[in-house]
Length: 133
Image (cartoon, rainbow, N blue to C red):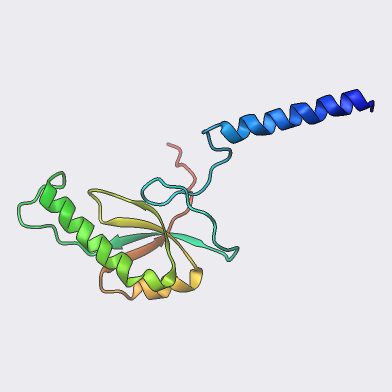
């Protein structure tokens, strides 16, 4: 390769790197927390994604789209997340009107979560094949 061509290649590579650095569109699909914020992978240990259904009693007469319902659900969810804080869970998704929390946890933490009084059930979140009619 000639010296001029090597210089041109290096210049183009530097320009491309600068353009990519200035671009606000992320490359790839980083994991997100329950609020849509990217989450850095903290370790290489295996993780298990689970759907946790919380025991939740809606306030009397509260509609799922009402403020009282949402506030009661938010308080229940925060109490649950505080109880499992020592397991270092990653919140993948929460819902405004459903008592569900999707978590990424170490597999050894699942039995601890299942024993909590706030938890109705824990199910592994996995892709199921579609059913054909």
